[in-house]
Image: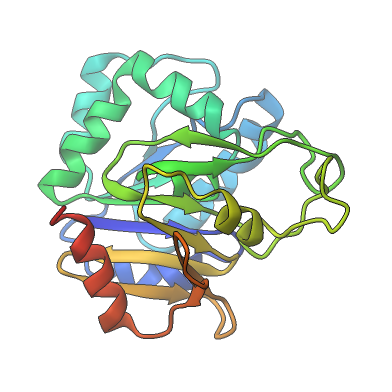
Length: 247
């Protein structure tokens, strides 16, 4: 399995070494988390630009508001060695993907060896559960934290932007997303990964490592009843991820 879940921030230094190992340059850009036309118009061209600069031949899965045909979905994911999921509105993305069966296509392609990568909402997609922000302006308004169900390719919980601080209606101390994630890790999940901006959880076959766009970016391991760990040992991280698939 090949997954790169990026918390936010600068993605290119994390993705460049991955792209250099690909068997082909065929890629799919998944823009489904762009829930408004303005968001789509801003994010898709930027993504196309850096994909081209990194040597990918990337096709956008669908236009804004379009439901791609099952034939198109099957063709693109049948050829792709790399997929990138743009960030945005996580609940909207998870509602829309099944409408064109892209969720099933992604799962099948990942099991065949395709890299599934993404930032923010895109980072949460592979997890069984993800801490999501339903607010339009999370840095400016109060909001209720919520958990959503992802594809379950990674049987754990995930949180992006772990180092961000958001106002919260019942907490005057204004928790970081990491702190709230640690307090509310779902009982059905034994392990959670809280990914800071400029960091990534990268699963490359049988090894797992922390991808970093800068040396200070961190990945935190959260478990019930235990202190939060700042993971620096990639061998230990590999063991933790491997243990999830033995249960």
